[in-house]
Length: 470
Ligand code: BG6
Image (cartoon, rainbow, N blue to C red; front, side, top):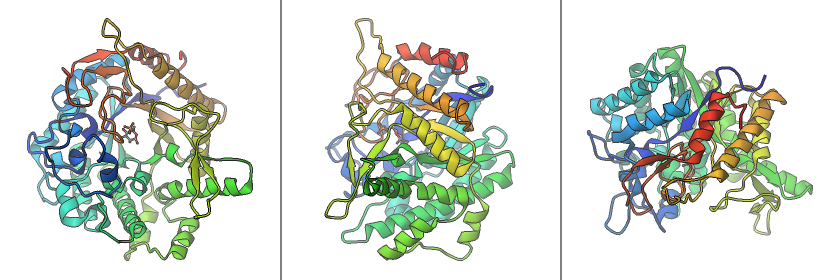
């Protein structure tokens, strides 16, 4: 026995990275729309630079992205041709509530997702929905300060209540927040946070984290009430929390443990229903508080996730703190990296799956895995992406070992960006993950035409053979 019979093979995307049509059919402005490609992007994503509207100086890739909004039928037909069993996509919050604090949803936005979901079902593709993938109405950022504000719970509750009722019986798998731990690194995309000068940034991030954890638990409660068949998962950037020690020196081992805990604590809350002691003690020492209100602990405790979903791209290395007290993240001399410096580590994938299954003992779903690469078209306009095939083949083999040899319960695998889309970190189109090539460049030129890369037929064969023929 290797992969389970009903293993959910597929691909994953995010609304803001492929839909485009940013102002169509009543959609409101979102944080992700106003993040430009280019030099300021990093400062904006990390909440260090306030940039909350369009200007003429920058190019904003999310505005049009790959225009999936108008081409979703063609794209889903291609996914179906590869044999997808599932498609993970996210909801653009501002399609449903353009400002975020309205009481009545935008029917045209709901209709778009009706059509998208029906299109999946037509091909027997199980829709798997991320409720928010780095996506917050800009009005909620401007008026309320994003997730630093507890008022967000109310708006999120309104959103999920509409979604769970509207798609009842059609969507069963839900993820509440994409890569929830990313908010500590990239608070603008993770939580809509722009820092004020001189404020305690750690405190703001922990406030936002608590609010997202509460919102996730409330969503889980509502999902189960609306339909007991619903399964709700967290979404953990697990690679970002996979730290090896730089040496066997106990101080390096301890450094790796500390770095891991920084990411794992959020999933501990979502899975165990309470904050772990290591984080409570850390906060006590740092003078940071968690903005608990009456009843919060009970809600967290009673509404833990049904499964653990996670992304994995590569692993990292931690070295004991320098004189300033900061743990250093250093290169791994045993691993190669892609062109953006992400280490390639298939065995780390097996290790991560084991870590997660040992710790949580809940079903696992790999919601993202892939390699960003520059693709070159040959004279026939074809991409021979053997490097992508090799990356996925090795990672799928490692996942197979984790299932077959280690006994981990993994029920699905969605590759990141089965069709080329806008990169979340760099805003580039040229950082490509797809099995399907999209003719568009970093400045927005191109026909948007779709074509199959070599990896297209390879992944089709993988799915056909249920992971046996890699
Ligand atoms: C994950 C995100 O962090 O990695 C995706 O959930 C993102 O949104 C993906 O696109 C790949 O990262 P990048 O920066 O190469 O697009």
